[in-house]
Image (cartoon, rainbow, N blue to C red; front, top):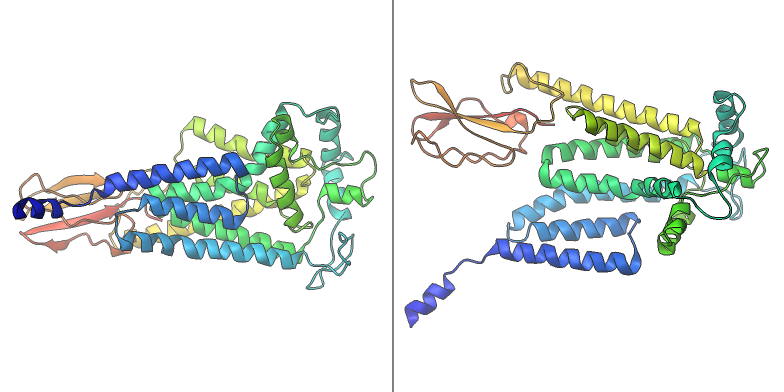
Length: 407
């Protein structure tokens, strides 16, 4: 009887089963929340749902895995929350609660630009204001059309796709997660600085204040949700817009982040993936102009800043790989633009030829088919500078880790 009790108590906990239960439970709660309250678009709400889901995904992997989760995500989300609060300061004007007009000065004394983007867009399009033209041809006061669904989906995706990409990269491509975080933070900082140094009114506000001649410009970014009879989604967007900085049109971060996404995944992608990536910024650009949210000049500025961030990332990456190559830590003919993410582990028999025993994205080699022994487990997320090409291994072998695509 005692032996039977000992065997029962000695059985290990099946953490894989419990982890699956936690993930399924999380998905059930999430689906119920979405059905009752809609998609959370506020930064804090999205952050809490992300932490909850990823915490379920690391159940049973130990406190170290959960600590790594917090270390990767808390600083990232804290900086984005700080951006949200700082953006509110950029929109402070001494106007007794009314929307600021052209020339009003913000908290650092910089004047608001309302007329400039109108003149700039008309200059670019031979006297025609693109927002007025699109609304005259595509907007129907009697009811929304099917294509407005695409516009509203595109506009709303801005609030969700950036954190969802971060989640996917953290799970499947951890080194690219870090690169994505740096690019997002750089783009966010550029936007915040510009909001302070070059505040600008959007088309719908300028039209409401009488600065736009001709047909009035409406704000139709939520029109597609009305077509789908999803009034709660439209209300969520409207509430979020009311809390935002009304004069943060320059640059368009909506457009900037679509260009950032397209450029980030462009290198090494298949041709049809590149076509899809190219369509996203174009759809966002049309959606923003039609909805009265941005001028074309705002979008061009956002796209330019995004290209600068991408160029900086690629240049820093090249410099890092060159330093690693000079230290003989990566192959000489590294493909900088490959989307491959693998690490090769080589066992060198004493007096023999090198033998590759495995290639993994996130795990080290567990056994050597030649019978030498087991190679050290290598975390693929470790910086390339921490890999050594000829480190001693018990049993007379040398184990090398060559990471071909670290950020």
